[in-house]
Length: 297
Image (cartoon, rainbow, N blue to C red; front, side, top):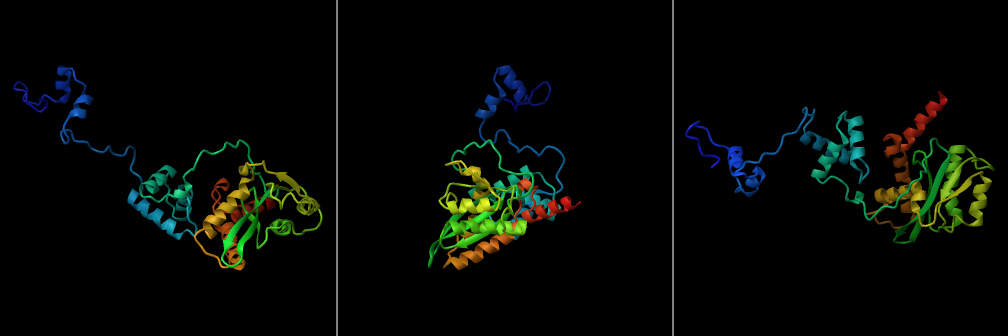
């Protein structure tokens, strides 16, 4: 009836007029209309046209993911590199949409289970205020399980020391802390790190008398994480996760020496190139360099 022509006006009656006369909602008509009766068109994009199309942006994203030495990075870091390295300025929501539509997001970044609320903060405003330390185990064919102990700066997430060893003793757990003190304070003498706090969990290495007395000798204050709440040692925990994702998972190691080489290579690359969101997508080394320049000025 809507396509019928009026003998008086010579024009079709139209859907709106017919639905009004018959007292039928137009939504009901379109819902019951046969497929193809009402042509559905995809709405056009609102606002001004972007400088580059989605196809060009997709190619730039694929190129950025290929040139990055890391895996599993999200859309925020991709957008940051596109802006700095390629001078492509697009919104993060658009980068997220294009990566999602083309299956370029890392499945490992999806949240599993319900996160536990943590209302506090462990991020400092300047370096050498609080470090975090933790250990993780890595399997090898010849030597079995080996340990990797790391110490991480809470300010810029820099790995200030990392030690790979066969046995997870209290002496080996102290080694990355010693490396960080020697690197950042220039000495491992008594009270060399006075004013520094060390965040750690309640592992047997860290609650031992030797460990606690040694860090006290260096002038370090122990800052204990809450029991069964690993997020309170989140900086060191997150570094160990990144270490395993980028350098350990998917590889087979023969002995502790191969693990030592892989970890050392990753730590050097991590400090130089890994982008830290809280530091404005700067690497730990870049953040420390700019802080040193600002202090000197």
